[in-house]
Length: 166
Image 1: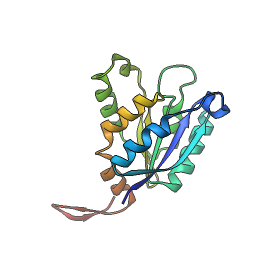
Image 2: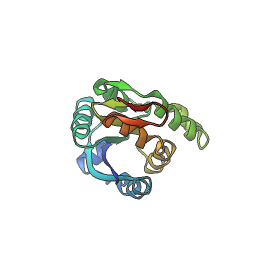
Image 3: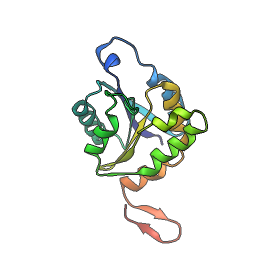
Image 4: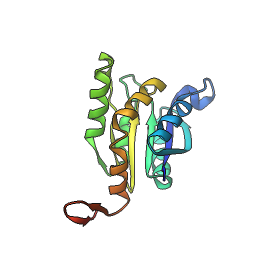
């Protein structure tokens, strides 16, 4: 069974229709191959309140919420701050894994401020805005996500200790 996933595209230009964003279509087959189903795509401007509201809404609907865009260092890049403002807690290893994998491909990864964490029963992960970078970064953490989602959704069977609560 596929894990339902929401994608929030953070882009001033895409939110006004000034440009089309191809991230969802590039991520969709990669998500499917890893056991995820993209069921919802939202496009919001680079505004903290809009991003935070979209994350809250998506986290109520799907156990995995991905954002793309707004993770760099420009004045309009506010996705990490908006994400942190709504998270129950951060999961630093996801951002660290994405940066480590990206650094093997480009030195520009040192400027990534992407974060991840839990909101209610959902996992939230910030991905880069460039479609290629979003696909690459999802690939660096994809194998960890099913377990993290399962833990947030309820008790999971632990092979050595029986059932444990999330």
